[in-house]
Image (cartoon, rainbow, N blue to C red; front, side):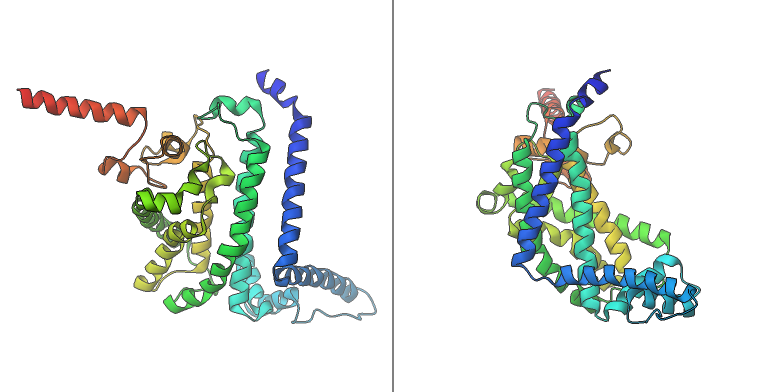
Length: 360
């Protein structure tokens, strides 16, 4: 019954959601006016291509076939690839058609990378913003006395969007030349599921190591004051704040996410960009969930004790020290940088045990 009572506030929730989406769209429109309209035009070309392709299919089924499916359109490329590559599955054909249609690998990779990042980041963050407005979930909020306001969420979203367009977008355009240099594959067929799984597992370990040491360094006085402090503006984090950081921090910590796969590829010569995309999706989910501020009975660390999760990172934001790792707990455990009441209790017990041995 408590849940249904909380959902009775659906009108304010709907109002909040509509305002949030309205503001996001208005901000994106402003960004679109001030930045290049290249992406805007390309997406419209794809939409027009789809419409044209459907029209041509209808025309081919009629007695007077006035249209054909030219290879210059996206769906025309798809048809051509399907005709001569029957061994490829439908996803591989769609992928190959995208690169064949644009005839520019840098552009094809850049658009796909940026759009994927935005869809996943906001697609995962906005549900947490909605959950923050439903009182039923307050009992799962770790710092439930600090629920972020709609204004705080919107202010955070604006800065994150600005960072995405002005800091991350230029880096994404530089990604493809770097990927080609180290031998990253972008063609078809795709690698096997097993190959992707073990590579992603390696990337998690490598990124977590980089994140621990670079994050710990960012808590050193001058670096904290000039770079990392902005990320700690919210002592009770929320999903949208995962990438709320200075441009320098975005580049430093982002190097672990992008650099680990590129390093792997440079050493082994074996990596497909699809594996990297899936890895980045997993990493975004991990970062956003770690900043969500919610601890559930089904949270992953209850089943994988070495997984960090929201409970681990929330303490870091609350105490401003310790718990420097991103995905796993082992670096903080090994180097005794765990934070929180339990960690303090264990530290005290170890100290008392040492003192007891000295007395004996």
